[in-house]
Every structure is written in structure tokens, then in C-alpha cells.
Length: 141
Image 1 (cartoon, rainbow, N blue to C red):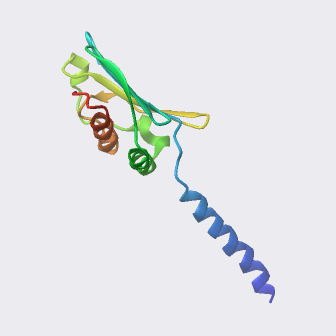
Image 2 (tube, rainbow, N blue to C red):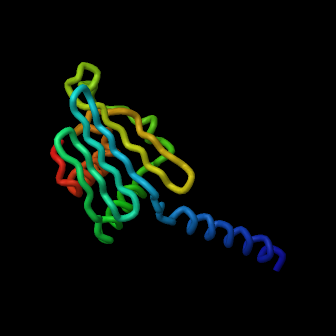
Image 3 (cartoon, one colour):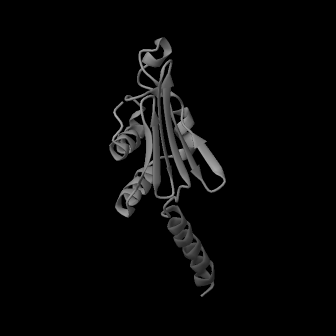
């Protein structure tokens, strides 16, 4: 009986901790910005609205519930605390061979900013997110 009094709270705490880790992250805003001299691509999702801006055009469109769910799943795969430390696989942006790109993800009162990378060639952890945003916006890189 004595052991039961000790084991029960420990098991309860472990279960609560596991449940808390499985919660999905609800983002407030996702922003992608890629630019170099004379060229810019900005893609922003807030709520169920996607706004886009390039050197040639700008606009907005509504994001479906299914697309938002897929986007949440992609965000939940990321370790947001570490995206600022991700290493870019190439360095073409240094010589204007590619646009300088970065993500900013806002969840509640916290903002997560990625390291800069070549547009179209992000760190592998961010590739899925970049591809999905371009697909949603119909903007060509």
C-alpha cells in the first residue's frame, strides 16, 4: 500500500507530461521572405489568409482548413527552438547567385526566426515548409 501511494503520483505525472508534449502548435503567423538586389518574394500566412508579394505582382488568397491542418503538421515536425541554428546547404546568396531567404514563425508571444539560406535550397528541415508555401501561393521562385 505504501508503494502504491508513491507510484500512483509518479505514473500520473509521467502521463501528463507525455500528453503535454503531443499538443499541436497553433501558429499565429508564418512569414517567408526572400530578397536580393531587384528581386523580392514575401509570403505571409495569418489566420486563414495568405498574402504574397513579388517584384511583379502581389495579392492574397484564402487558405482552406485542410491546407491549414497540413501546415500545422509541418510546423509540428520542426524544432522551433533550433531553426535559428540550422546550417544552409549552399552559400550562393553571398554572391547574389540566389535570394537571401528566411522564415519567421510566430506562436503566441514568441517569435522564431530561421537562419538565412538560399531561396529554393533551405536546410532540409525547412524544405517541406518552403515547398508548401510556394505551392499554396502559386508564386514561382
